[in-house]
Amino acid sequence: MQKFQRLISDGGRFQLVAGETHSWLIYHPQQGDLAFSPHQIEAVLAAVVSVFRWITARAVQPVAVQFNHARLAPLADYQSVFGPQVDFAQAFNGVQLDNATLDQPLQSADLQLATLHREYAMAQLAALSQSSDLGEQLRSWLLTRLSAGLPDAAAAARHLGLSERVLARRLQTKGTSYKALVDALRRERACEQVANTSASFASIARELGFSEASAFNRAFRRWTAQSPGQWRAAASPKVSSGDTPRLTNNH
Image 1 (cartoon, rainbow, N blue to C red):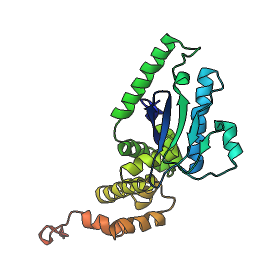
Image 2: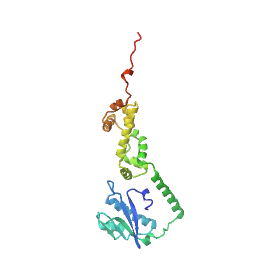
Image 3: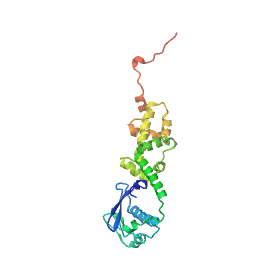
């Protein structure tokens, strides 16, 4: 679980602390603006217990379960999921399990299938680690989509095979956001297109996903403090007075 947890979620990480007779599986949720809520942390630990019961085909009951936050519902509700020993306002979130339970062989174990799954998971983990910069992936994708209308963050996340929350968290670690990335891409493309092409401002606006030319004009002024016309004029090559064409009279 620890080795491959990045394939499941970026919402937090697991840590196994082994003892002589019992071990703690501790969950460290992601901190910051996109930190998991107490309800989500409870759902994660409930999922851990459910997975243990599923893969062992036994009614596994934790020795103890504890949460960093205060109790949010009647104690009996928690005990129906986790067992009798559930504590709150503790130093960490975690599930304590009997080592004898952890050491039990799986009845459905299949060495060949396990090897195949492990190789595939390792390849996916390597691809995740070596993938190109997330921002560049998004930029490339957005450039092919903007002309059809501005895609929302949910669509971008689906394209990358991520949840919207995970996408936001990964961009946050890079000091940006989906909105800021889109705005920067539009600004860069707008300045380039206005300065270096003769395309109409309306067509540039459509290419960048603006619904109206007026919205594009307002955005361009926000980016550059100039109108598109002023920007194009400033970028146009100047003709010196000595090179000004003269009209000739053939009479």
